[in-house]
Length: 387
Image (cartoon, rainbow, N blue to C red; front, side):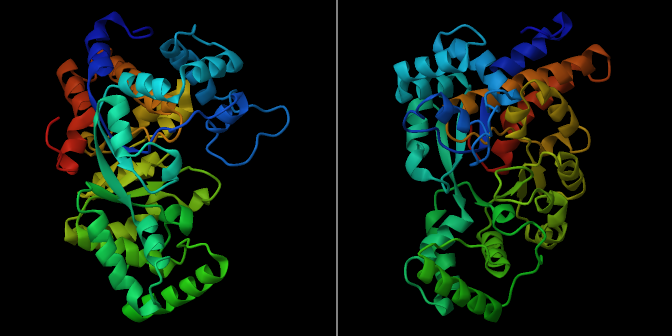
């Protein structure tokens, strides 16, 4: 592996070959994304068009894709965006997905199925394309919106949501909240009382019936969903840190969840802080002081590209190593599933290799940490049997 000292090649080989559990991921695109601009838009993490003179390809992610993904499509490294997109369309979505998903080296994908599912492969499609096992993570807000659109009354909503959540999550390994997108993480951490929920549900359902859009953003209802998830008892994933323009970044700082995390602790339910960048050090602190808090730096690793080493190193500063999980948070082009894995593998090998070479870590300890973050921690937290 280029850039890794010879004395650390054993770590590089382990990182390159270790099988992963991608504990938070979305499906790959079921169809081709289209032309070079359309593919570029999938590299943006925004629904806004690039302004004149700007290309989403000219970014750390765009450069990483051209460097590492082009050879998987039988192109030279750094192939240009037009040639890259042309080759992608020649192969077709099914072959592109097969190549990238199988090359990611993932044993199991834990798939969030709650976002734009019609465009993406579901768990079964991901399994067929990759050869990996899959499991579902159920998005709380999506279940609530399905219940709301079913014609329930305000008085019925809370109970119907609980029934639907238990039914939808019967075979799931976890649940997820996108509270950061819908309101922000700075919520009242206590469970709302039933009267509050009925009033909030009434206002939401009336507005949704008038507009035809059932999107949960009321903080009282979002709190009800979270506490129903606590009662369900499965690990709870929470989006934190950067994302698309729907969120206010300063209100996605995981430190804002401290009150909720403290309130949940006696219940013995694990909380997994997703992505975290640029607040990954705050997430590391929470994982350090609360036994039921875990984190990943997925998404950030992919978008930072050549700077992924720094993010991986910083994620290892404060959090106990048994609290870190691998994630790609890939959505859309299967290149992102592959890049998430490849960039993490290279980053962890480079970071731990330097520490071993400097005699700050032993090689044996570095190997244990790679195995734990790659898959072992996720298997323990989600109670996954060995693949």
